[in-house]
Image (cartoon, rainbow, N blue to C red; front, side, top):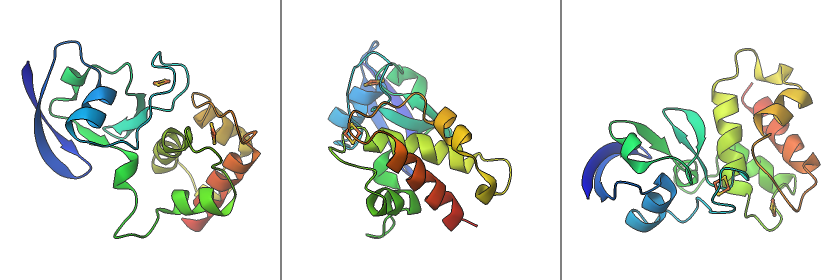
Length: 158
Ligand code: FES
Ligand code: FES
């Protein structure tokens, strides 16, 4: 076991990890952060997406050892004192979450996209949103509601 230290949802934390353990398992087992889901476990579905130093990654394939010294954000970091993040609220308002299994990963990918968006958020196109969410699969919504939700959340930031 190896000790690592990193910033998790705003707090500095330490934990012990096995050499080949993946970040997804460490988040769920060591920190009880159950919002990050395991879908495929093979880097295909995006359900396990979290942010590392602001970039969306598939935590099912990301070695936990590489987190040492970095900043990790999970879906649990978004709501502020019981108030939903604009993305969460927009997903709710637009029916963008049905079974909800893909939703945490979808929202974290959308957050990385929005945080990094280079120009005025109201200028976003559907094509840009589709590209940003290309690594996140949803079996339920048909994606229209998801794209509408991301667009609405971006307009709210104007
Ligand atoms: S569970 Fe990680 S990409 Fe599917
Ligand atoms: S809401 Fe069910 S997989 Fe996306």
